[in-house]
Image 1 (tube, rainbow, N blue to C red):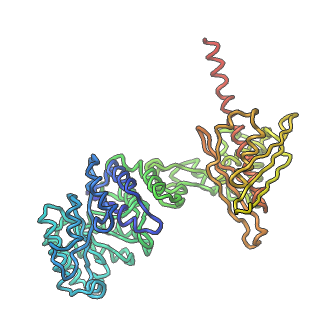
Image 2 (tube, one colour):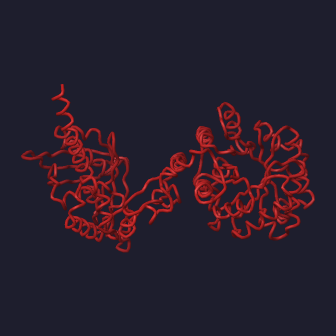
Image 3 (cartoon, rainbow, N blue to C red):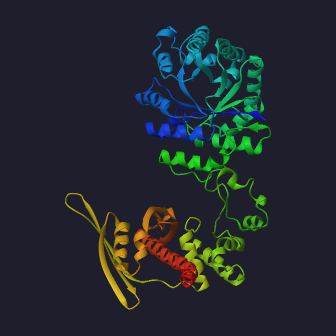
Length: 538
């Protein structure tokens, strides 16, 4: 088993991605999380670039890291400047990390046209910087920037840059596909050429960008060609189209490739959690289609697929989702078959009623034709099942509602909702204000139900989404509203559809209340026999 080093640059290269920003505390917390999973290296940042990165390197020394080695990142000395007098190199040494990553130009074109130096001085900049840092007692990783572009244009010079770095004392030479434009076969050939040029004196690594959508594939191709070190970011964060997604690289090396060992033995089971932890950290939604760790990675919608899964999960899943900490999801839509309905209604114990299954499926198809979507609205789907089975009894009757929105002279907007409902023989008519129309409706409905259902105090709305269904209709288009709610032990979503956004919101809101009340009744019914038994025993 060949050990592949995993080098995480989320805190530096990943932070260069659009919309990505880490606080100092974020950087420290993520460093600890990566260390706990057995990541080999964590690149903390560029200490010469900003005060936050400088403080990070001071604070990170206080962490009790068990495995990960923190790296400071920086460039070769500037042209025409003695290495001892270069402020960037001095900042790297002041960071006081055991490992320093130096990036230098491995392309003659980049050296001459971009940084405006000579080919000879570029080699001197590489050699002098690495030798100086190495002499100060630091291990050096050399990132050969634009290696593959340089190798394709002028291989002799590019190979000379990495030989120069190795001779100056670099412990690892990392080949960078900086523009992300190389094809997989080019990455493999370039990696083999680098290994041959270095004559196995130092290990070779790979650093790929995703501009052609090949960063993961290219990273794997480099490993197969002999690279022992992979750089990338969590979730593929990075400049332009991002970097290689380390989560996908790690999963492929551990589960698909033969003969490679990565991270700690139990780390794979936490990949999904790590992915979502980092998305939450930067306040971004989880992309559902991310391989291995995405919400849709093991989601099944087609009836034939779900039917096959019922026989053997290997029919439509390439791995067990639990291996990477994910889970299987069965979706329901107009494309579903009876197998989906059976899988989703297990708790209702109606799988032996084929006619009911057909009614439920027909209802789903009809509702989706009208604009509903139940994939992300399990609460509304459960109510639909009860309605088709004849077991749903509304807890209250909706009589009327009204929402009034006014703009005051000072520009302040006020929202007031009036709700009228019937509970048995009692009619409740309540008014409430809110921060917006949906919040006002929620407040008024709570007041109307107050005293009848105490458990509603535990319920709160946590998300609200609106989607236009037929945008070609302009302002007369229908809208679909999904409301996510939660209580102390559960999270659920409900959906409403109308050409009026307030009506769609009202329908979704009422479903959310009904789902909560039905759920609590079912839980109470399940507990009742055990409570009675306890009373009898007492």
